[in-house]
Amino acid sequence: MSKRWYQENRRDPWRRQAKAKGYRARSAYKLKQIQDKFEVIRKGDYVLDIGCHPGGWTQVAVEEVGDDGHVIGVDLLSTSPVEGATILIGNITNPKTMEQIDKELEGHFLNCVISDISPRLTGRYDTDQAISLELSTMVLDASMPILTPGGSFVTKIFQGVGIEGLIEAARMRFSNVQRYAPTASRNSSSETYLVCRNKLPKVKKEAMGRTAYEQLKDHLKGLDIVIEEDDPEIDSKIGFRKYVKSK
Image 1 (cartoon, rainbow, N blue to C red):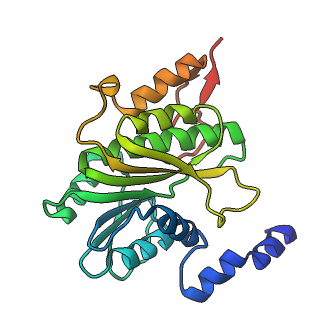
Image 2 (image 1 turned 90 degrees about the vertical axis):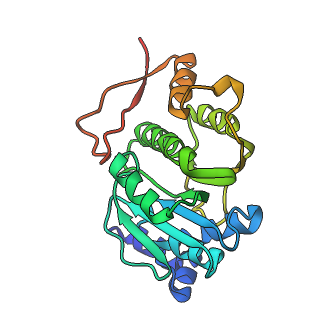
Image 3 (image 1 turned 60 degrees about the horizontal axis):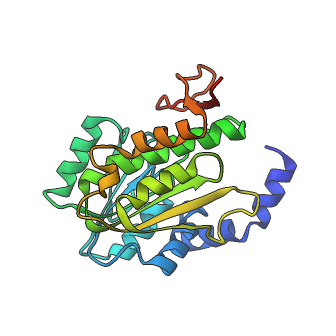
């Protein structure tokens, strides 16, 4: 751990505030700021937090849904129990994980899906941004069958090549799609959040029969970028691919 990292974190007001309020991560304030601006979660909602570890967003979601709501958190990593929430260990792209989520919903549809998910970073910005973009797009696809019409979807994205493809795919599925950068994000971070509200009863005609991931691939092809097979040097935990300029 570098001395600079230690000093920056000691000075971080969001980290100090999160610790004082009992939140597990400073990122809890990112969701609180998103909620204050967009009200994506309402009392009594059923909410799924994808990539919930260590649980900060799950804690905020529990506060927002109240006693009549239900929050499910899922992550590949083991996450300590969050009072008022159900925590699952699993891969959102795995059908068995989706079966577990369906069981917890007990016939209900989700009102909101939130995701602060990130890949295991490699330190190579282009690679990390590409993996994160693909991951967020696949999270969107996984959410659509269990998100009720009128529902909301929030995911983290990193600024860079290809994000307009994800945004366009979201606009085919929601009536209101905006980018938002909470002040709780670090100044040095390129992260922003895609806030999608009012899921449409059915996708727009241009996206009929196509997943968001397929739309993203088409968008990248238009930029002369192709998706390569897994890079063995990248431990992304789910096997996502990298994007490169086609030759």
